[in-house]
Amino acid sequence: MSDLQRSFAKAKLAGLPLEPPLPANALREEREREDEALRDVVPLPDSAQDEDSSSASSASSTGTVKPNRLSFALFARELRKALPDAGILSVDARGHGETIVQTQDGQVKGIPHNLSLKTLSSDLSNMIKLTQAKFDWPRLPDTVLVGHSLGGPVVTDVASTGVLGGSMLGYAVLDVVEGSAMDALQKMNLYLATRPRRFPSPASGIEWHIRSRTLRNTLSARVSVPSILYQKPNHDTSSHDDETWAWRTDLSATEHYWGDWFTGLSKKFLNANGGKLLILAGTDRLDKELMIGQMQVTARLVVPGKYQLQVFPDAGHFIQEDQPAKTAMVLVDFYRRNDRSALILPPKVGDMLKKKS
Image (cartoon, rainbow, N blue to C red):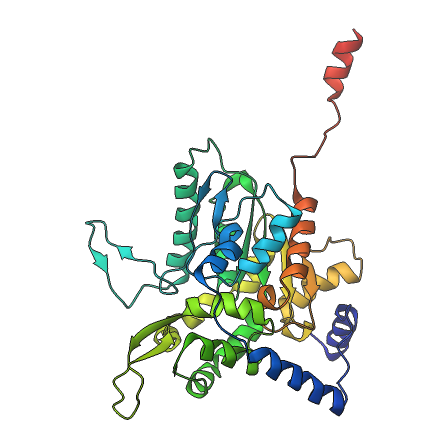
């Protein structure tokens, strides 16, 4: 892509203006408000978490599948406000929660897990089929797959296989594209080395996520952060704490799979069947293939646009946590545009002629 094309694309893609820098006094006031809010940062009690996550875990109005990861809890609550009859299945990926992997002979398989894209994709499609069998559905309901970060390649891979058949209306990918992901992986080990390895309490983990701007929504952090930590014995004799809280998922142990997850993602995203939605925190995350695909929309060429792009410049990487209501509304609009149930087809000419005769 030439410099002229790149400049044109970025100018067209910047549909939402970037936020202007805050003046110094505003930054100071924002930090004071943040400090005041963090004084009461504690994990939500189990009863409140169940209330917030109930819509995230329901596969239908008659059954429930409880997830261990709650990063979509507030998003799901907002989604159910707009679509009260929607069923939402939140899948716990292996190695990310309390999922137990068993072999065919019933033996529990320990860590390390097989976290290849093929395996994760198979897990997702199998979970959907098992849900269909659990509730005795004659066919799968119309489905929109949604994946954030690593979940993006997983839902895209499932969409590309066509395993869900005509039930899949479309798929949405949240803040991950091939180009920026591959660039970020080069710095991943440095990031993992600089973040805390453990916390004295879940509240401390919540506070770190807010202060570091990893999450920008305190309520969402109180719901989701405790689920990504687990309690383990503290073997540090210099510490007076008997227990510490560590990351449930050892990201450094997954390095072998990093390239497998994201290589070829953009091409697969553009070519799979179904409606396509990409939600980003900034247009600078687009790579060449996605930029060209979006130019076909903005330039109004004969070739139709390949996907819908939505940008939330005021959100961080965890878009569905930072902006749960806005994310939900975009997904609702996406679903309604691709919903075929309300589509009324004109009568066939042959049937009209038969009626006249």
